[in-house]
Length: 308
Image 1 (spheres, rainbow, N blue to C red):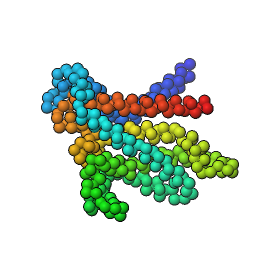
Image 2: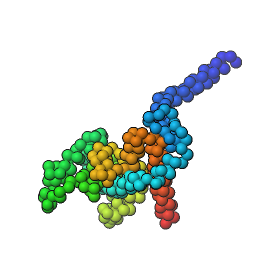
Image 3: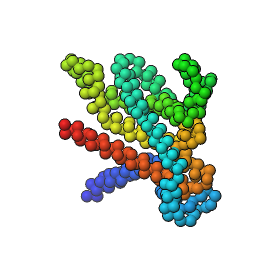
Image 4: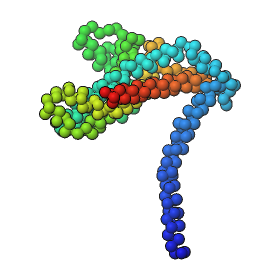
């Protein structure tokens, strides 16, 4: 009896000990997530209801909804929000469509795909400061590469791409598309390589053209990948800050001032952490609402397609 019970006890102890292993491996990330992501988010929600400042310790006096009311009444808050949405409209369609087209063309190659993977993905690993310096140099009036292209097309405008309020956001969007298209390209290429080539061969035997193959085979089978790419791209574009701050600093004037720059200026220039936290909460809810609407619309479209 004693001899038979000992192995069970040892096995039970071993199983209990092995259960701690995964938690020990997760502990460093869990502490990092709690200290630098979860707790600052909770503190942001709390601070948005107080007159918190960088020049005073603690949360400060209770403000209630005053910070939110102020943000709703500020014209620069709405203009920065519009500039953020404007940037999103400029970048999301090309970053989705061009990434898909480039992935389809690359997937058709029998050899040399590694070169195009490297060429398209390499800019994505560069820091935003490097990308901004490259494109500021390209858009330099008179001496930049963009000015040389304009000379070939016709008379060069007096204002440069980044110094004209009408085109500054377009210039930032062009730089962003060049910089980040590689990430979506890799996602699409991975999805394309999971589609059996036999499907395309059978469709070709039945007389389907390459365009019909894309419409009837590629797009339906890449539906989940496309949903993921669109959702990630919308969220990333709504959080734009680095390129704008480094390329135009929100100018000319405030023509490219986005929401995160308004939040940064309110917090660290005006020293009003509470008001900046309220603006952050509003931007957070806008991002969540857009993501939820996008997912609901996608679910409804998939349901209708299934019924058909």
